Image (cartoon, rainbow, N blue to C red; front, side):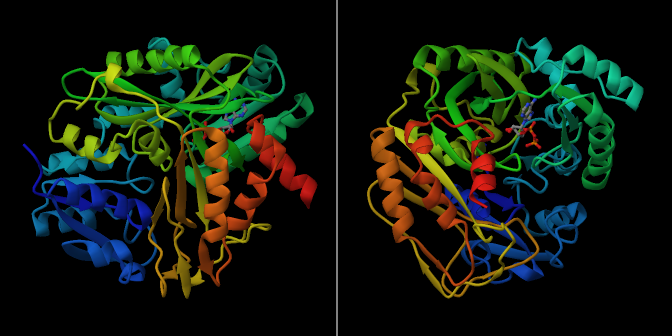
Length: 448
Ligand code: ADP
């Protein structure tokens, strides 16, 4: 079975990314949108469109009854959830399937199990994945926190069980910070996720964030597609990603890739997934698994030549993975810059009308964006408006190509983080790849 019509339950650049993959598979596309997105590019390019609600995400892109009704109205046989919004909502996956529509993603119980980070760590341990030392269950009260922290050793990090986007995470450097960190992590978790359960991990001092892309099909085949390094972060959110990581060699890559691939094979995992690790002193520590397409998937596509979204759709349609582990070859180097509609110094969101847009072009340059001249960035959603992905024969060439592309790109007059990327690219630390997850944050502190 190949799908006839896919409803794309998302917006922005990712909705366009899915739409393009559908077109190349001869699948009809349905865009859903909020009243704020009537002029959006994904709406303009889709075969059919349905306005499903008001501007706020809860009225539109998170509005499950409206999305299901839209899918039934147009006769979609599958729903692609994109990235963010409902992509890791196991209830949504279940409801979609209960309406005889295919959810393009893993099984609901895998989404659920990995969505709860405490459960995810228990599962990861059972699957033979190395963990950050930490509490085995949630921390119920401060007394419990004190005991756990003593056992784990300071500094410790309190994290939300339902966490995401770097929220609900607080560090305690020593016992005197613990009560404040515990209380504020719990209340932030409650406010952000409606779930105040928190757990504790050793706070690694200078790790790198390295994640492995995996894929599984319904026949039990699993393949890993190497790693992405996402250590250039601000507030625990990725800013620049690259593949391969400048910090690991082929033997290490094979080792961690095989651990990840074997783990998902044991789970019977279906579709795309990413296992995220912190990497310090030659050791990997699992932090979480994302059961969906990732924002930074294009850098993996660049170095492997594999279209991950097409593969994801075909797997959901019941096909086997179209390649074997031995077919995966890594070619050259790729870097992605996330361009946000934000002030590059204060990071205050900068929605508004874009009157000038020029996309850089040339060999090895890819832009994933929903922006066009005359587009108005709405204030209601994530501020990511474009991803600039550059691929070249090696890391040095890739950085040079990216610097030129950043010079050429124009998104005006709103503020964007383009200047931040230019700044990062000029540093010696970026040049030699010697950063860790705290490098950018420290650099920003020292600059201001
Ligand atoms: P989220 O789901 O909110 O993104 P993650 O668990 O994926 O949370 O962690 C996001 C980032 O937070 C990591 O990339 C890393 O920078 C930091 N982080 C998470 N756990 C630890 C830890 N135990 N020690 C140090 N930093 C951590």
